[in-house]
Image (cartoon, rainbow, N blue to C red; front, side, top):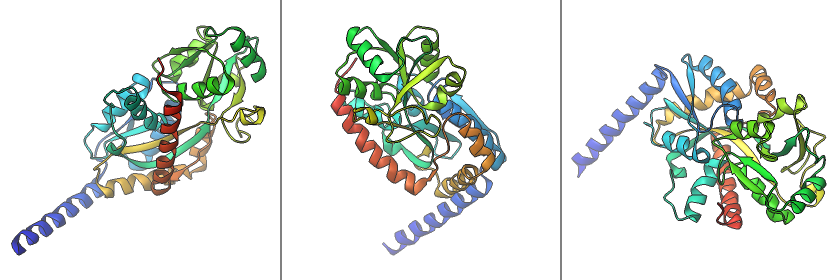
Length: 323
């Protein structure tokens, strides 16, 4: 027994030394950051300036890999199966918490489990915004809801997929307002936004960053947001709560690594992203997308993630089974 304990202790020391050596050398090659959506969505627009700054900080390129499909489940699942060495990171939205809950509701095997990931940092956290085309006849939330009631089941909205971060808030709105709309899922926020602009759908809910340029160009108009107060990026847009609808939804973005990644590597990534998040130049670039940095380091982000996941699971259960 004593000999076995000595061997285990020796193995632990060897592992610790190897882990520390990995951290000292990490990264020795390019790092991949999986974005589980096509280009043009919230996760993508946040990931690109972050990846560039992180690559500069680490001394190796951080390459974006867009892996869309199934509301983000395909890309998240891929990242969840990656080798736990710090060379595959995940930039995800709050949908990471929704999709396994939805799979359980639908009695399907989840594409991944939350414990396959460790949180490194939250980058942004914005309420989603309800937008319509500039030529839409609806100029206020009241007009929009009246139109949905008059066109029951015909007014359409685009999403990044069933139970995704664009779908759940719209289901919340339909339940709160007593309306029924037509759901049109796409492979990501980018294609959904293009469908709105192109006249294929009438509305959508998304993070400000994926539509800010279109709002500024006068091509789409925001009617309301799912936050609790005023949005810094869109101060003139009212919240649903201020208009009598008690609904809220925050679309946050965060960086994750595969569970089992050496703690020394995680710590190196945490420090690098912390430095980046506090850099005024990076803050300006990310804020320019319409989503200001709202950084949380790993311990605070982990606590936030757990609470948000529990809340979103309740929301999925309330929505129930949808097609």
